[in-house]
Image 1 (cartoon, helix red, strand yellow):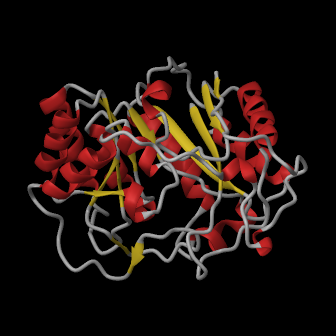
Image 2 (cartoon, one colour; image 1 turned 90 degrees about the vertical axis):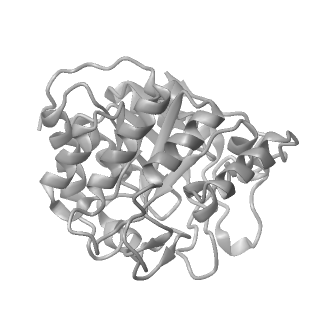
Length: 313
C-alpha cells in the first residue's frame, strides 16, 4: 500500500511550479503545531540521556509531530559529519572524539522508557573510523533488541565500498536496512558530495540481501532538486532491480541559505501519482508525500511482508 499523508489545505498551484525564489512556501507545506506535552517529554528524555536525533540535527519538518507521539530517530556516532552533502543541515567537519562506549545502552534506555515498538537508528558519516562506525551500529541494534524486544531499523551511511562493514551491520539482524539514494544519477555528486557513488548505493542493497534475505531493504529520494520525471522513474527501476522492498519519496526543503536551493515544490497529487507508479513497479510499500522522510511512520512499513526472492541484478 501507499501511505497517504493528510495536508492542512489544498494546493494552490496544481502544476507544482513554485520555486524557492518566491521566498514563500506553498500552502500544502504548512502544518498545525502539535500541542501534546509528550513533545516536551521526549525532548527532555533525550537531553537527560545525552542522545542526538536526526530530527533535531537535520531540522526535520516532522520533529514536533514525532516527539508528540513519543518517537524519534536516534542519531549515533556524534553530531559532526565527515561528508559535505549539499542538502543536509547536520554539522560538518572532523568529529572530535571516538564513539561513546555507553551510547548503545543509552539508546536502549531511551527506547525502553518511550515504550517504542520499532526503533530507528541512523548516524552521521564517520569516514575517520576504519569501519565507518559499523560495529557501533551492531552494538546499538543488539542492545535495543535485548532491552526492549522492539523491531529495529538502521539508516546507514555508505561505508565507502567496505563490504565487511556492511556485513557487520547486517550480522546484528536489523528488521530493516535503509540507505537513501537521495537523488538521480545526474545530480548525485552535486547533492551527496564527491565520495558518493550511485552504483555502490545499489550494490549495497544487493549485498544486504545476499548476507541475509530476511532483512527488509528500504531507500528514499528527495524530490524538487531538479530531477526530471524520466530520470526519477529510471532510478526507482534501478532500486527494484537491486531488490529494494520499501520506498520513501518526499519534498526537499532547503534548511538554510548555504544549502542547495529548491528547484520545484511538487504538489500532493503528484506525490500520490508517483507513489502509485512505484507500487506498480513492485515495491512492497511506498510512502510518498511532501512531508515524508526516511523514518516517518516507519513501524507501519516495517511490519509489511516482503518476498525473499533474489533480486534480478
